[in-house]
Image (cartoon, rainbow, N blue to C red; front, top):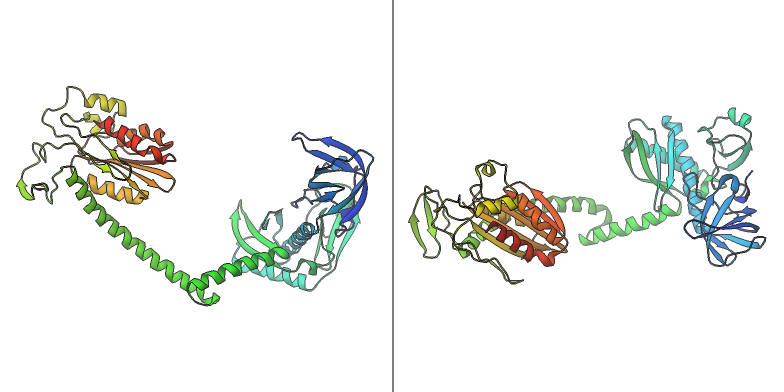
Amino acid sequence: MSGTERLYYHDSRLLEFDAVVISVSERDDGQIAVELDRTAFYPTGGGQPTDTGTLGDARVVHCIDAESDGVLHVIQGAVPEIGDRVHGRVDWLRRLDHLQQHTGQHILSAAFVKLFGAPTHSFRVLEHECEIDVALDDPTDERIERAVDLANQIIWENRSMTIRQVTAEEAASLPLRKEPSREGELRVIEIDDFDLTPCGGTHAKSTGEVGVIAVRSWERAKGLARIQFMAGIRVLNDYRKANRTARDVAALFSAGREDSPALVARSVEESKKLRRRLSELEEVACRVESEELLKEAGYRTGSDSDRIIDSSEDEQVSTTRGSGWVDRVDRAAVTDSSRGFSSDSVRGTSPTVSEASVRGSSPTVGEGVESARGSERVADEPGPTIIAKIFDDRDADSLKHLALALIAHPNTVALLGSRDGDTARLIFARSSDASGDMSALLRRVCPIIEGRGGGRPDMAQGGGKNFEKLSEAIDLASKALG
């Protein structure tokens, strides 16, 4: 037998009661738990959350079903003594909410059985909505709405609900909707000529108290149909929010609420077209921007394989790629005007990579840098042009477009960064004939910005949260290649 008489079993609308304290204990988390000889507080169980309220001058924040040891009331505030007589008061709005959700679940679950022979496997009252997992074959909006319509019909007929205490033998002869989860005497909830099921929760006295049931959404989960629904005052609150949102959206289009879905759909389609067009223009702009950056670096760009334009002298010069597609090129000294960052201009030798690296098995950053400075470098091989630059508020896609535009030019390495909101972004890329493992290089510098990244030897990208150290990261990458 339970150490606590459970008053809610007999009257779900009983909110105030007097009781005697029979034990006081401290739980592992330091909270105080009080056991009473009788209580109207419902403890967490059966998918229904706990009641809250007051016990004397203390606040009841949680109730625990200790089964044969009774109901434990976790309190905050004045602690009573064993033997004290205390007055308890249950929070009505919370009890009403749970009463409506739990009774609504009984009605909705019975509707699925009546219409489709689909039993409910589990039930949960969540903070904003409820969930039931139903064994419904071929779930569709139409089938689910049929069950909702039947459930609301039962609610609006205001059918009576009664509580019956039956023995195990009596229960065996009753048409229960689900099998009992415990042995011995059972508490059975009956909805007049509609449902009969064992349950220990709080319920309405008639179906009309539930008010209304609405399904918000559903999905397939673990072979079942997981249905999100709500009942009673939750439906009203949800309607108010949904209606406010619908009116706000309609106001943006200076239209009626019913007209807004079509207007939103049209706006979304137009937005998709504009984004595609913007992406195309972004690529064009990046190609132009890449030309400017390369000109600033002293790189001579060209429109075909055999002719290049010397941007500094504004004249065309014929050459071939045999001995180096362009004359010896200094490394770029590209300044970030917003932060004063500058990669050092380096003349002379430039890094090379092994034959294995060119084929895809690139050395690590340390190995690549060491071999690049060795004696195996071809003396007249031109060094790559390194474009190192940091931008403000440039997203990852835009950085990638610019990097691709830059490495479309021979013997070019792009080390680009951006402060995108609170995020530091990096993208390293090289043209096919330039040396270096961009993925290894990025992994080396990402810890500086407290982030991570990866990619391929020819292109890698990443990000982190420390955008203040973008300059340091790119400077290290530039020096590693030099």
